[in-house]
Length: 401
Ligand code: PMP
Ligand code: GLU
Image (tube, rainbow, N blue to C red):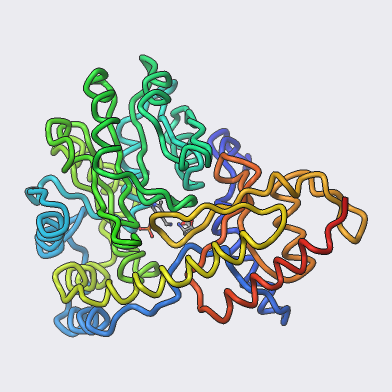
C-alpha cells in the first residue's frame, strides 16, 4: 500500500480539530487543560430539536432519504432563507450535506479543474485551502490584516482576480477573526464582481446568527440579487442551534451547481443522517427566540475576553462583530524567551508554550494564514474563560526579553 497518495501529500490535518482533540486527550490523561480551541458552542441542542429527532425515529424515518435532503428539510431551509434573508429559493436550488463542510467540499469538487484558483481572504477557516487542494485546485490567500478589520477590500479583490480564478470564498462573520461585512461593504465588493462575470462566490454564512452590538447581518445574494446566478450561499445548523455533532449543513444556489453537487454526494456519502435531517428541519422552522439569549451570553463573553487580552502586555485584540472567536495579535511577544530557555519564534511556539506552561489550548495563527496571531474560541463558560485568561496573563508574564 503506497501511503501517502499524491492527494494526501497535498494536505495537512485540520489544525482546529487537532487542537480540540489534543485538549480532550490531555484531559483524559488527568491534565488540567482549559480548551479554547474547539469551534463549537458549549450550549446543548435545545430540547424541542431533540424531541423532533426522537419523533422521527419513532415514525420510522430510519431509511435512506433523497441524496441531497428530504423534501421536508428543503422546505424548512427555503422558509429559513425567506424569513432571515428575504431570499426566495426553490427546493431544487437547495443541497443538504453532512455539515456545511461537506457542502463546500462538494461544490469545489464539482467545479474545480487543475490550475483553477480559489481566492480566500486570510485569515481563513483552516479547511478552505485544503479542500481546494483536495479538489485539485490552487488556493490563493488574500491577506486582510487587522488594520483593515480583517476584511477584504474591493482594491485587494480587484488586484487578485486572474483568468484562472473560479471562486471567491466570503465568510462572514469570519472564523477566526469574527469580522463581519455590512451590506455596504458587500455592495462595494459586488461592484468589482460585476466586472468579472467568470468569478463565482461562495458565501459561508454559518455564523449568521452570532452577531453583536445590533450588527445587521447581510449576505451577498440579498445585497446583489443580480449576481445570484453565480453565488452559492452556505449555512447550517451547527453553530446557531448548537448542533455540531448532528452534521447538517446546506447550500443554496443555481440548479446546475446543486445537481452537480448531488451527483458527487450520491457517489460518496449518500444522504445525510435521516434523523438529523428531521431535527434540523424542526430547528429551522421552530421558535427562534432562544437565539437572542445565546447571542447576549456570547457577547458578554466576547467583551470579557477582549478586555482581559488587551490588559496583557504584548497582546493586542480588536473587538469582533460576530462569531465566537477572537484573533489577537502577538507581534510583541515574538523573540521573547521562555523560562525553560526556548524562544517564541512563531505563533505555533506561543500556542505550545501556553499549553505546556499553563494548560490552555488555543489555535496558532499560522493555520489560518495570517500571522503572528492566535485564535481563542470563547464558546465556553465565563468561569473557564476567566481562569484561562488569568493563566495566559501569568504565562506571558513569565516570558523574558
Ligand atoms: N464554515 C466555517 C467558517 C466554520 O467555522 C465551520 C465549523 N466547522 C464550518 C463551515 C463547518 O461547519 P459544519 O460542517 O459543522 O456545518
Ligand atoms: N469550525 C470549527 C473550528 O474552526 C470546528 C472544527 C472544524 O471543523 O474546523 O474550530
